[in-house]
Image 1: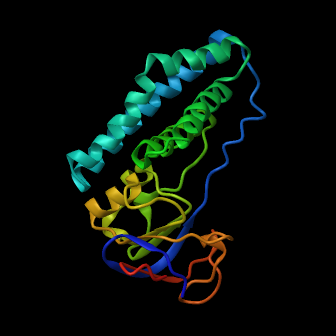
Image 2: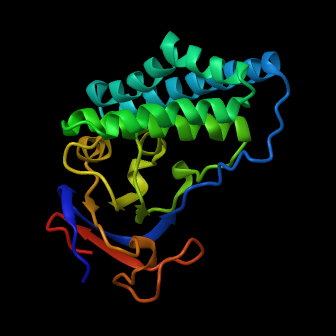
Length: 234
């Protein structure tokens, strides 16, 4: 049995579904001129706002107003004139909209990741969530539909961001298992608010490459039985 840290009480037994990061490679995107890139950036930000507003409403219904406010914070980041001006400055220097969003977000991620306070470091995870969604919109990258999962599913991923949690069909999620995130992480807070058992399990090869109860190895295309309990067992 693999062991981890329980971050949300309860137990869940079901088929494990591995969620892998979508490809956000923008190396093939060609710079179309500063004006066009700025228009693409602003269009992506508007789409992000609309999408996040909808997620916020869903999260408020499933977890509560306080927890839904996490997504308010995500929207506030992209309303920050300084962050937007930094992105547009990179575009003026010849960067594509994708490179500008990626570069500025990574600067903030590096800054917050170096803080001593765990709650402040959580901001790095929030910005990474915003970065991934914004790039996904610009690149048209598909995302796993967590609202369409089968009943009794144990979700397994490197991390569960607030935007991912907001898309979950709570009634079909038996438990979640992540490689990162502590008791104060937003994913743990949301899991507790939604009553979803959650375990953080660190290992050198990653959860997706380790055998779990039920036999076989987990992969994107294969499901195996999994157990997650408050004692941290898997």
